[in-house]
Length: 128
Image (cartoon, rainbow, N blue to C red; front, side, top):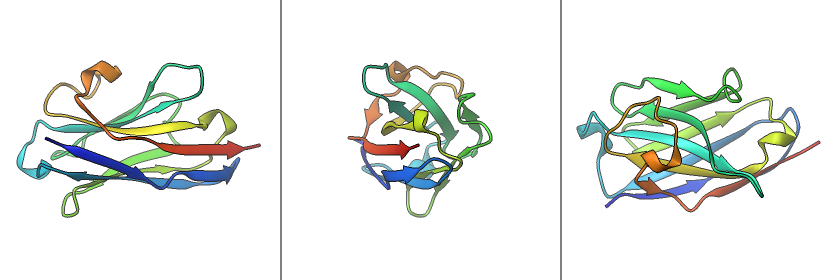
């Protein structure tokens, strides 16, 4: 089994930055090239939406249009940790951010149903 624990959320003013982390346990991702991890977010009253994904071993990435140029997904192989650097934050970025993982699939598969493992989420609030 894979366990995912997010951290790094908080309250920030518009234009500010936050870096989210997702600590993983239960599997060494670097040994499995097919694993991909992603960040999703869910605002109140809205469906969970894709933000960014990364192929763990290759490092290839995919971003939602809303994240391109502002957010960067990365991973630390040695620490089995996933990151999301968020810059130029906007009030519409306010949401609970979730880390997700799956043992296969394609980076352009952006539905939440395409991921098997989920963290508990971390709240990001951007004030105007």
